[in-house]
Length: 456
Image 1 (tube, one colour):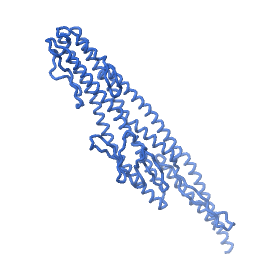
Image 2: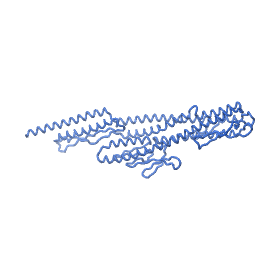
Image 3: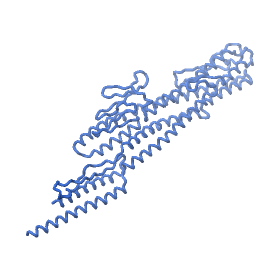
């Protein structure tokens, strides 16, 4: 009966292979699906030396996956997430800061143009009023741009907080899938669909934070941050949360009752990109805008105090700097009148000695945390230039990250994705294998019937 048994085992093996091919074809458009195959193994003979073998069996189901290519894809997802999240903020800030009519430079230039124009006739009320109007317009531009930075800061913090619930849920799901994979594998069932689900979740997590993944012998995957803190180990998952008790957002990771304080600017992915933009671009820019407003108002007010009004009265402050207000960072003193402008250096009507000192302030140096010592008239231009460089660099890095991600996906697909042409060939081959084995069974039946007739 060995011929029948061999043929039957071949037919069953071909049927299993056909089932796998049909599964691949059915999922050819399923995102994240990893193609499968069967490993056919010959069954050894009974040891009598007179049997060629006992047919074939399906040794195991194969999952065509390359862990290196998966790791590359997850690293690319992290880089792409980091630069993609930041670019809209950089683009908005660059447009606002460099706009011809709303930039700080435009407001500062108009203010000093008005001061310079007043030099034609320092006693002219319209020209003096133009100085006050230009000062108020300049203040509004400072306030408007500073308010944009304040709103961006709120938006970045909200976006960072919004990432955590989904991230934590993905970690819980990965841990649950780890446990399910262990139990399913112990029962001898196919775990490939579960592994596909887990890898899609890991890909999602990788876009939010940079991760390292270790595939364990028991089928589980251990996930950790680049800095080593665990995110998922077996069926245990970590939880990320912000602690605001100190007044600032501190990102903490809690795993197995142990809490780690994280440097959010170094966690990578969307979360790390947003934190890096907040700490290394947005806050320094915001501080520089405030420093320009503060130092310019101080210089203008100090110089006005050194001059005299037409009646010979010492000058009073024109500008008020308020660092606690996002919409009132810089303002013209309430009730300030044209007669309060101390343009004279000796109290003589028409004298413009102090006015010339006011005009010269534009060419005086100020000190900014981000740029060091710069001329007041050049400060905004240099800030915009630095912002433009940061934006261009991020755009270039985002383009590179997009290309690397696409290449890594293509590399993954070359190993793991379903090729319908290849599956069509497999379908024909295994169909032929099945039919050939069924023909062997038919021949065996014919021989068996002939044998019975001989003894009949």
